Image 1 (tube, rainbow, N blue to C red):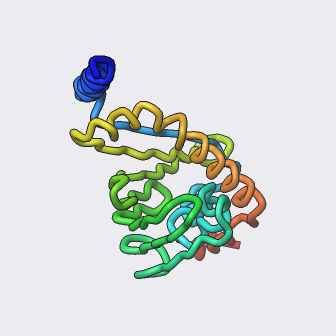
Image 2: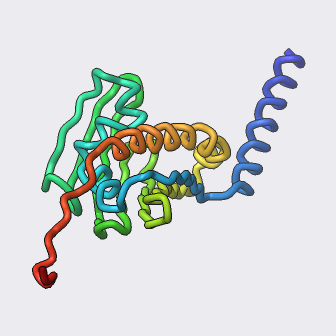
Length: 188
């Protein structure tokens, strides 16, 4: 009986230490990956701004071909929403909350009890095309388990950001350049 009591006390002390240490961990996590794509900003922007395009390049969608998806709101831009259900990658939704053409797109994610991080795509014209940055910010709050999990988020999610950006790069670099709008002010 004494051995059982010592084991129980040891477990309680161990759990208490985990909780105490977790409160010393950061409550916010930022994940960011960037890639230069040989395509103009408007072409890359349109891949992200229309959530149906994500089916072609998003790493998580590619992980589960049986994923159920539903779209609401406009075809693209602010208030465009996608919800999904998946036995492999979980359930959730994303809503574009702000869309600035060829500059940035802000998205609110909802993973149910796994949190509601925000995500941002930034598009920067560079010499060889467009630098695309995919950023996710999570507020882990006071939950000790979320804070411990936060230590591993970058290593768990970052590679999927990289895969998504690589997939997007392959797509946008094969697309034809946008049609040039004639300048009526040119004299012939």
